[in-house]
Length: 480
Ligand SMILES: *Cc1c(COP(=O)(O)O)cnc(C)c1O
Figure 1 (spheres, rainbow, N blue to C red):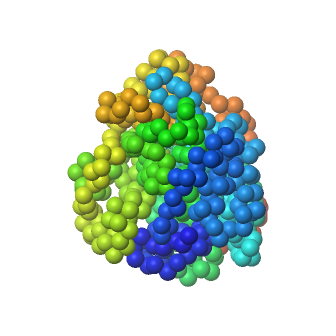
Figure 2 (cartoon, helix red, strand yellow):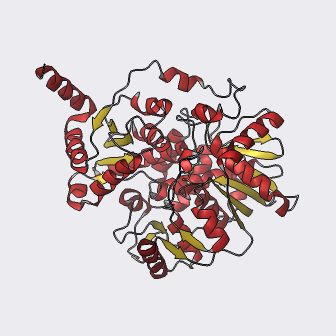
Figure 3 (cartoon, protein in one colour):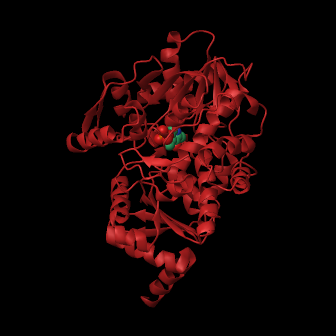
């Protein structure tokens, strides 16, 4: 199993190399040269505990890794730090809910980042290398990344967020982690400023090499690989499994990472009849599936903020599959997109894909309606997928199991949900989140300047978070 770029650079990389490399040098994303066919093997996985299932599947995608080490990563990632099962399937009203919300930060990104942190640990130890990750977050990714790497030796993580522009709860999830390797940075600016600074820092190749800068966003293939596992886990929990009754998944998607993993699972032999892509009012993906035009617009702030994305980075991996794995063709299309802000390509017409954009109003209405009918409170992201499933339900055969993917605990979004379900105060609380208010925070402040960020990162690598903090305190003292 080799990894190559979506834009034609076919230098083969191992899985471990792909994990450290992030983006390919030609600007493409790394993908498997060919996906393994697991159709004969997976039915035998019924009843396996999640860590074991993950190990079996990932062995196919990461054959270069020492099996004992890979197994240990899976066991640690999906063991005690999950409050319940990793991906339980529960009946809620007329649908099944795949709950990916039981990780340390109560959102689905934990599934991938808990594993990615451990993979970094193993791979870096083997090579005797270190990695410094610089990221920008508007809320959700930051905390999942912090909890993924906070105890991993050889890794430091710098997370920027726009000062005062993320929910207090989301800030506290990040800033209460006081490990020496974790740096939370409030930037006096917007999320776009944060992202711009991180991009500029990473495109300074000298700085990147000198300071061993890496990425944790979903361009990292390990995140997609980890997400493929829960689609198999879901299927294996359906009634009658492993007999091959097809299923439909409705998936809340922003960066196309969550649903891309479902498409990979399908291509690896899981009987998925249809995929329902749910986005919010940022409708670039539904537009593509409906008209074959992928066109950038203005990003809007919605009730499902983790999906407020205009350019879905993983769409490129899907395009690569659509064009028949032709890297040159992808390069042309992405150049077209870069130059014109849009690209055209025929969307899949095999009837497998449906894509819908859920309005803010429908998001809130759906949360209220499902609560009333079933007693279950959905978070706003999950509500978009529930709504999309309802809209398309009549198109699917009655024999198909319908599974809605739940991506966050509703208690992470109390301010949004209070607008539609003010009565459900219990559902809007979680002991883990409540406890955060009591904890001390550590937070650094920077102006919106890439140079300032570079200086800070270089100093942080040298001194650690505690060291930088103490130095700042000394300085404040000597200035009276
Ligand atoms: C990130 C996120 C999503 C979207 O996932 P993608 O990988 O961007 O498709 C959906 N819901 C929640 C709660 C998220 O944090």
